[in-house]
Amino acid sequence: MSDLTMENWVLATTLVFVIITKFLQYSVNYHESWVSKFTQSNTSSYKDYMSKLHEQKILQEENHSISAQDNYAKWTKNNRKLDKLAIELKTLKTQIHEQASNSQKFLKTCKLIGLTLPFFALKMWKGKEIVYYLPSNKMFPHLFNGTWHQGWLFVAMYPLDFVLSKINNVYDVTFIASKVPVYKGTAVGVSLGIWVWALTNVLASIEFVINQLFLAPVVPEPVITEKKAN
Image 1 (cartoon, rainbow, N blue to C red):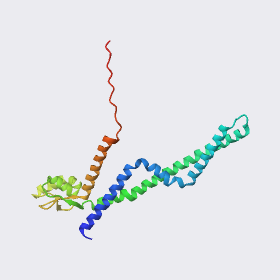
Image 2 (image 1 turned 45 degrees about the vertical axis):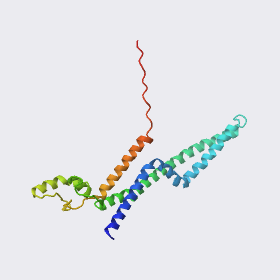
Image 3 (image 1 turned 180 degrees about the vertical axis):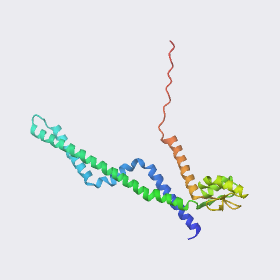
Image 4 (image 1 turned 90 degrees about the vertical axis):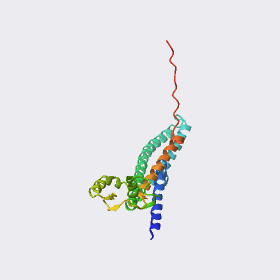
């Protein structure tokens, strides 16, 4: 596999992870209804609940249509059934809520195993892969070039590298973890980890602007009342 093909594969996989993550973020308000639709609707507890709820509605309508004095026996019998149904419905509702909670936990586990951990592993494994190269290695200061090229760890290691480089009287600062110069007259690239960080921050900024301009509730202007002179 060539380097170009590998980089395209890594970039495409990263974009898929980002798109899925954003989709789940935007649709968070619908997750509960989706869980109810795809998991609870097929359970026996849910079917029993809906059946008993329908039976309760019929009995209530029947009791409203008859007179308690003229049909006392039937009215009393319906009331006993309604009391029993109320208890059964409460129990079934508790079971449905427990099933929904378990389904939510299961989905969170699936998200962790199927999305969060693989995305984290990809960034750790391919985080230093170069997405693209800058036109010149003089576009940014040396510290920025090192960060773009090798990630945030370069910032943490930079002071120690700088001190050791001065001690060793080395002109270019080297990255201690890899012993490879960030640049020595060669092109500086943007690593995958930095590219993902920049992309997510740009998307977050766009979301903030859209939310403030179109989705945020309008704040009414304060009402100014003039005080009457005594």
